Image 1 (tube, rainbow, N blue to C red):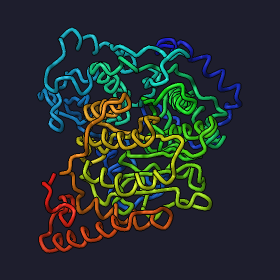
Image 2 (tube, rainbow, N blue to C red; image 1 turned 180 degrees about the vertical axis):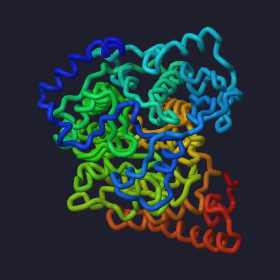
Image 3 (tube, rainbow, N blue to C red; image 1 turned 180 degrees about the horizontal axis):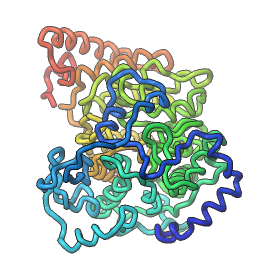
Length: 540
């Protein structure tokens, strides 16, 4: 079904929701119906302060009480970068933050578009006459999956109706979680020719309300459904919804459920769910952090329903997946592993300390590797994989593995402030691909620099298609900050899993030597460490 066909069904959507007893939901649930003249203001700096926050976290509702509308603000001629959404003076042709030309073709070709080559004039004029949700994707899609499709195929999950989910209100900056994220990724994958060969497209489907309640409360599902009765709604500070968001969220969830089911049943080898809205912050009873339904958690439940006994979720989004952890906190059938920027709880959402290991029957089945600062890159992520994650994963021996693939730890992301490259993402995927013999489901989460997320998604898809990134460079050595986080995680997780004693000892020696040098020279904690393991190797 196309976007235009969906818009023609507006009246039918409202009547269908009323049939589910939703007429009185607004009185019982905290959904804010906002009309454009009175909309609260929200600019990029507000969002950066929230998702790149370095202060004590307050209650979600209390934290939003001092917000003020965008009134009495001097209006300046400016344009917003398509790539990073930073504002620029109207007389500048390239973004001062990322260097992207204001008319670049990044939405059509993703990371393969020239950074500074303007599009053809007639293309730009055509786009000016189109609304955000009406810009069509000019790309080649893979063939649809059928029962005759090769079981070694990689399936893509995507539906253009997910582009309808967008922030309606006119704010001082575009919202980071915007439809262009999917446009740039799909454009880049198509331009790179990755939709040929063993690539197919899984038919899209909306998750049923009963399926959503596998991981969410009935009231939560009703709250999200109720947003389709309003032009604009907000959950908390900045998790927006419009009257198409519930549809987009059902499509995202249904896509992940069906991809995971097909992988477990052996109908496809692996899959990449290019979906939005994202999901890993969505708690069992609360939408937050740009997330409505928890797509990865629903995929995990689908795997268990399809016959898997043990499921692993690896979350490399720069923000901790507090929703996913909460949903499976007491469940020993799901191993949740997260690498994220934490800063002693001062980085959004504030959860994900190494000491958070799960509760009750799930104790020991939450593994958190919290980075103490920004600037963390490939070397530290791979060091964590090799020394903490892979040893635990091998012992857990999952039947199904899901990657919550946020690309906001990528270099250039406006919110993440880290330095992971497409090569880093490829190597992490390869380690899991080898262990699982290719059986992986990758679910898109965050990531807000279009060039970074399209390049990173392409690197991951190449691995899913069987293209190895090669050996991990020996020059990739951990930084002092990364070593601190990995060492702490190793010590804590050694209570539940076998962690190699020699690796622990070597890390402690490296840490001791690096700490002494750091104190003496006041080095940047993000510089590579040197020690018994690294002294004879070039530094990266």
